[in-house]
Amino acid sequence: MTDRRDIDFVLHTIEKRDVRFVRLWFTDVLGNLKSFAVSPEDLEEAFDEGIGFDGSAVDGTVPPEESDMLIFPDPATFQLLPWRPKEAGVARMICNVRTPDGQSFAGDPRACLRHMFHRAESKGYLFNVGPELEYFYFGDSVDPVPQDNAGYFDLTPYDSSRDLRRNTTLMLEKMSIPVAYSYHDAAPSQNGIQLRYSEALTCADNIITARQVIKQCAYNAGLYASFMPKPLTNEFGSALFLHQSIFDREGNNLFYSSDDSDGSHLSSIARHYIAGILRYAREFSLVTNPTVNSYKRLLAASQVPISATWGLRNRYAMVRVPTYKPGKESATRIELRSPDPTCNPYLALTATLAAGIRGIEEQLQLPPEASIAHRMTPAELAAQGIDPLPHDLGEAIDCFEGSELMREVLGDHIFAYLLETKRAEWEEYSSTVTDWERKKYYAGY
Image (cartoon, rainbow, N blue to C red; front, top):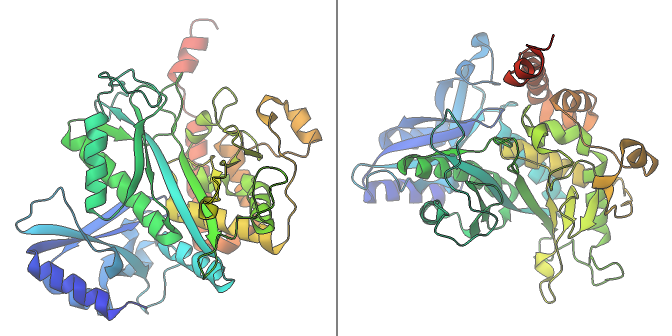
């Protein structure tokens, strides 16, 4: 339920700060940010009755004959847009989509995550996530030419993006999104930014906002920010690392255990949760890695997971358990390393939370740590009972299609749309003749 005090705060702030335009944000099923602007005079009605819009204009929503939809702004997400003028300013709110009869729309990704979060909360589980986004700065949106040759954590005058990272961090903090740290990443022109922990729905809102702010700041600097997982052939790709933990209502970290027999300090709940992630990894890969290009990042030659494994401090593992800090029980967590920043964060968090919760419910047993799985052959992985992650988008689609869990937690609408859209994308890619094929085969045959 919307708190009337939040609404009153928004209306008061708009009047006090001379806000003349309010942008209403929401995403389609694929995670693309959508928006339209309303005047402050229309907000009171928007909070109470919603604002109608043509849902058929948004991918994954509804056909034209069922196009009437309502959008309800969430006052808790109200923020001024700091890159817009202060006079006659602009604010934004992230919205929920409902049907004309006021019901939550089955194709709204935010509603999907909210439902999953409430389901976990009913069991006493409060889901917290700290996201870490990687991305590239290029000169334009046409040709991915690196703007520097700096490397991982380099402090050098050749890091052309250090001031841009600073400006981006300040812009995010003006929108009440705290940044833990930012850095130059491993590849030329690659950068990373880690946001502080928040509950799942706020985290997904923050990721959506951060992607927009990063692109906006790059545009202001005459550059283009790309979240493409693998834009450069011989360089590292970009990930969306998700640091996850579960707390109870008293603020205790349910992933922590004082037992340190294996050096992990993982509780039985954490072990079941990880086991669930590993068990359903192949089934949710289409959600966390949704593009053809996603699977060109997940290669054995890179420092990325290629199979459903876990490990202590092991960055080749799909689920990494960071080193425990004495006295920091609240920081005990897992790091999910397979997702990439092209995913819809609402659906990615829904899918991974559902897999982990299913692991707890089914009391799945955590397999032994597989520290050298990235060096194993497919036959060796099979002998160890280790599932490889999908090799390409086509395999991910097949795994997703057979998943009862994904259909249950995403709902028929989103499930069917992802299948149809991604199957068409894979078929289009498979039938396209590439430059590599022309160079390889044209003159030789």
